[in-house]
Length: 116
Image (cartoon, rainbow, N blue to C red):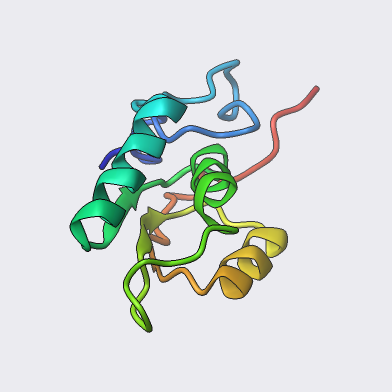
């Protein structure tokens, strides 16, 4: 499922605005739909893969699933795809929850803090 857009075109959902803008990207899935997708995956015994590139999107996945017990035994029940904007705190949360992450590292030099 897609939770946000792409960092390369400034549509990944971020906590801080993109440099030179007030834009935070887009959230493409509601909290209710994310929760329902997790419930469907659990009921059907399949892994849920969530596209989350921005830090706000990654946090939303972690907030929803990091503390839930998995449903696939020793296999991961939720996977984060194309994670780009990761903080040290997120790394610890992912590690503790044992969630696999497919990282997309190319940012085109656009990672910087927006002046306030």
